[in-house]
Length: 137
Image 1: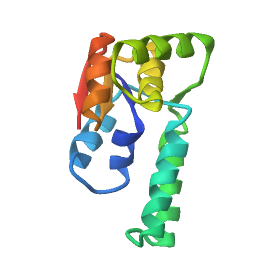
Image 2: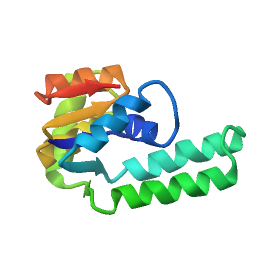
Image 3: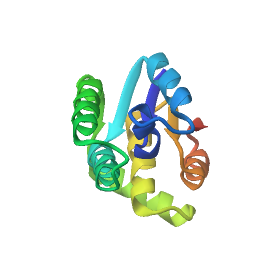
């Protein structure tokens, strides 16, 4: 299944928290994987926050970062295009989501995702409204 992960879900592959087991199963079941161009920087930001808060050691951070880059090596990284921006605008006009959340949904639509995975209820609601099949983790 063509599976698109937003940042809130994708980070659960590397940090054990509620939903991590679901993310792992969905990741392993995906026949194709995609994330938006902003996903990796958002995950890196979240991981560095954990380092600053001392929830993650520098060594753990480096290991997780290396694993993540290995995981996305064969993934589709969906870029910002005029079509993605137009779709994002429509999502923002139709649903009460933040810009980055709408951007992930728009990227999933542009890529033709068969499943959109997120840990954000509002984002999942917006994705459903945009006619994506979703999974809240």
